[in-house]
Length: 331
Image (cartoon, rainbow, N blue to C red; front, side, top):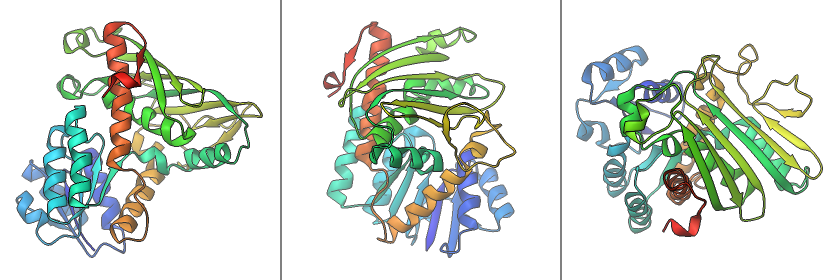
């Protein structure tokens, strides 16, 4: 299989390394707007550096898009129209209209597009989902999700990211739908610029809390922090009628723990998200290649990405307007 990777920043370079080690990949090409960076990655992995997007996509079977968000939609259309099976990191776009347009374009082109929400492939989340679906913890009454970055991204990135709800917590919104098999009904969100007063001018926050009500009656609390120098900390508590599950926490807690497949020596919090989700990223790309070959169903569709974005949009509106927002308002 011939694969092109568009964008080889931190995550793109990681994906390139994984795919260069994959036996099903016969040819790998890397492209980046920073030509020197593309050549460095190509030299390290001993693969081909493409001088242009045209050269990268010529004759390939699949494409992996890890470019800036504002380029995703146009690149997705270009790949799908060329009948190239496509993987794109979240989000499809910052705006809902652009995202809806891609959902429709996938249908029109009858193309293959998988969106990158890697938590769906983490061993801990997978086992928790199986336990919930099997009824092992009974009705899910409530859950708590915590997402902490080790260090905040550069201000220039924050200013164009779409805000914490769309950039960081969108992973939590996606995994909420996937874990519990319920849709969000309403959200109430607040946030703070404590420690990051410059975010005020950007219309963003450094810390946020979202209360979410699901269609089956489950209640959730989701909190995000851009700055936690102890490390990258992603964990979940799920409280049911029969039991409580914990994902991504120290196994010495009194709860029955469902641990991710990260190296044992790197207990939470983790030094980077590559350590926390190493196995998940690898499983995600492997599943994409199976999907591209027609051997598996789509593990994360454009429609899934749209629903996660609708929740993020509702959270942003709730924060700005200081009120509870129903998802029916986000049309």
